[in-house]
Length: 179
Image 1 (cartoon, rainbow, N blue to C red):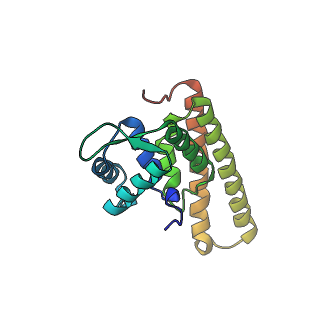
Image 2 (cartoon, one colour):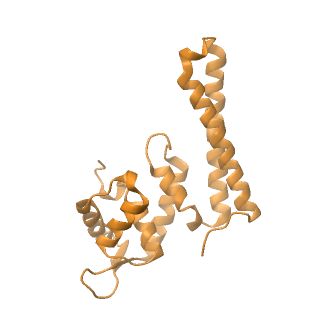
Image 3 (cartoon, rainbow, N blue to C red):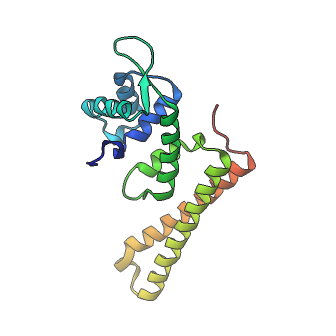
């Protein structure tokens, strides 16, 4: 569990849902459970995070009502985009869901920035692929003794190709974000 509430993996998808439309806390919870069931969002966590986001100026009340909806502020939108970039750049897709969630919101970035982030990530994945391939070459062991490394080499090769291909599709205009 993160010591800073703003490091909670639910923050990015919550901000992303508020980019779409203002929502009250229960509507956020319901949509998180629908779109991101693997995050296992808890009622108390979502309600607490809305309070934290409000105190930090990332969301604000939007009109009247009970429950009162919240909407993203300009600071919240800037934070949302910065989180997407940071998680696309730094999150390990093998260890947690942050990379996948950032990928879900790739269309919120300018196309050239999105393509650059994907190309940079593809290059780092290719480097990992080459390192592990060299490990296999130098090990001279039967495949079954290092089957997990063979699996990772195959996965990294696929991931690097997918990232590069997706960046190229963004650059060519073949893949555009919804408006």
